[in-house]
Length: 607
Image (cartoon, rainbow, N blue to C red; front, side):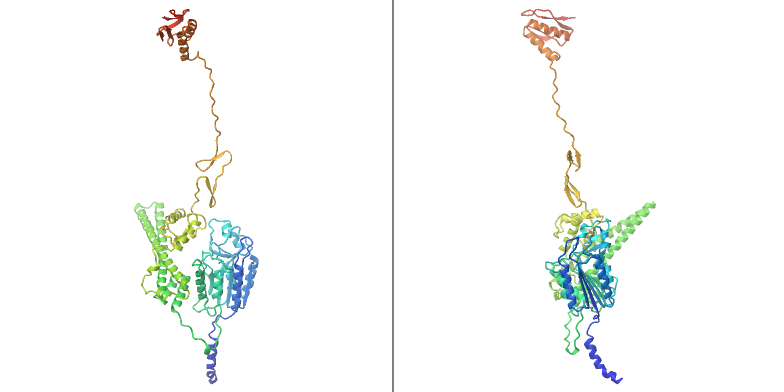
């Protein structure tokens, strides 16, 4: 026993020398997959370059196994994952990095091999690899399972593949995921539902930031991803925000342990930065996103700038819960009203049920407005924090801290941020309800477009503001909502208006339809008539009068005789040297012959 106590100082020195090394210093394995040369889609420039950078970074960090592959088919990818799973069985840390195309279908994420065609939405189940398959490969690791996806690009297959079901959703980027295994982190190059940028150089901004921070010796992996996020936000002008899903315990988990040094030569620990620690805790609570996480943060940091932000987040969650409860209550009230109406219950009971349903609907609208206001305030505050963090990534300015209970007036503007307005306008344009430019100005045309969306989608969103609730609701629609309206002479053809061309012999009518043209009727020619002066009474009279007036007795007599034979009574004219007059009623002319000065050829004979 005396010898044991004599050895205690030596044992203590050994502990101090080697105990400083973190527990996560066991076997570390990594698999790097990069797909650029797609056979049935445009090639990608950066993934193979990004894969090479990550493979070198992990090798330099001392990983025991770094298997780097690129441009794999579906069959080869499955084989490589199976082989990698064998190497993770005795590993403490397992990392899979993937760069290439990814797609989200019905809330599940898939990695796309280079030989995938994806002609139909159901082809993804056969030709792509689900994220769950990758998680199975890293599952045997004992202490940390990390999957990094630089796959949030704008996917070309989503625009061309046929939909076997209209209700099957195909989203932008990747869907949010919640790992079911403990000590598992899944890192996206961009937040769920958003796309990432490839950058202007040979590598993506996300991979460059990873190579800079991820393998820093002794740096907790969660803090490393926090620095990656800051760098990407800064390099992309706050347009791309990496995100990490999953959770770890309270101990630091570095990918690369700090090298052990003798206790006597250990450098003094750097002074802690309370503001930086508070910021890290805030970002962890933001990733969890539920009320217990924010309450735990406030219990640890009850005052200051981040505390006020956390309170806004709790207010948003509370408003969302109240809104959900109001929706359920309104649904129950409407169901009770309809039930009583169907059963033909008493009128007073139906009236009470109708009143309760109306009151529940009003409460739902009030709760919706309160939720939207809380969401806008939280989004504006978070945007302000992101801007400040991007400007000073090392720490927040001391002047930004405010006493507990002080309202963050500068972080809650009356209107939604411009980025939110622009996002809502872009999504409304995608579903066919907005045809203007997504400039972030929530003006009258933008409000009308959201009103159209309400009309055709059956929603009741507030059109006066662009809320995060509106953004989420519009993004949930995977196809056109508002009908395509074309001018006269054009018809809807998918999402475009095409000119209507009528065939020969057809013309476009006022109803925008081609109808057969009727042959033009030829002009009716004038009918030639025999102009027989003897058949026309007026002409008879003119001829008769002319003959008498001319003084030609024979001609006049013949005309008069002809007239007498046709008109034995009235209608004849008796003419002599004094003039002409109608024959008296009941009389007619008779030709007596002769004619000449003083001798009438016709005589008026009366009965």
